[in-house]
Image 1: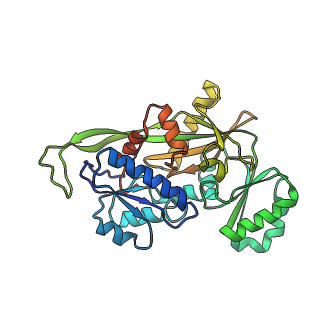
Image 2: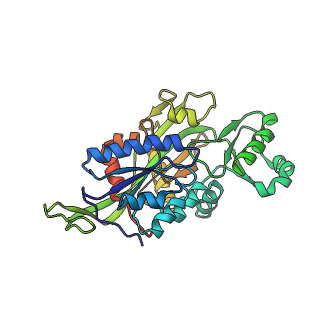
Length: 344
């Protein structure tokens, strides 16, 4: 059962950012934004920590009491850092070890969610140890258009849309060599949408505990329960040459038209938001997450992936959805902070 800390404006919050993944640059931007927001909110003992092999020492040297995770991709969003923080008994934001690891691995995400009846595009997986069967694998694939993706990356790193069969084998081989595995997914024609889900805490004020004394009588915020809230749906209309919401479209201003709320019927909107919450629960996510989907022209919804530490940059989706829901960037950051915990 998740245990939640009590947090005051005196709490030492460590914003963990940067790291070692291919999404380092995005993480740096997310971290700096969240760090500045926490300072504006009055959490004056907030520190920035660029994650490296010295993370344990850095956390101890800074006497960090809460870890605010702004890490994206491998060695941060995949359960590794979460496991370390659990061992250190240091509360952190975002999902726990198992949920993070599952969501980072696209085939395992699909296996868990489809077992519960949740919809995905058809897909085919090959890993490095199966490379001897490469030619046979290629023969089993559907005709393009298809999406070729790494097994364990985010931010659309290494994702390609293949429309010519002559390019398919080469793209899969390159992905297999660079990332150790590839997933080939049938392309679904429709609207690209994304839905933020917040685990909304019911918060009460109580007496302070922890390493700081509170002789000034300042209140401490503590959890009394949670419920899930699906944010307004964001529709993404990328302008990049790739023909889908790729890395360039995600992190370059002006490269994507954002339709918020998405141009969906009221019934389809409710269906997609409920599916996002079901996905959150099925993976046992915590705090917040973002679920990417396709609202297919065939009238069906398809889950693409789950992001357990969504971007918090100036161009990121989650803050934009929150703003339409009446939640400012700083308010969103504080909600995330107050959802921190252990034993997730």
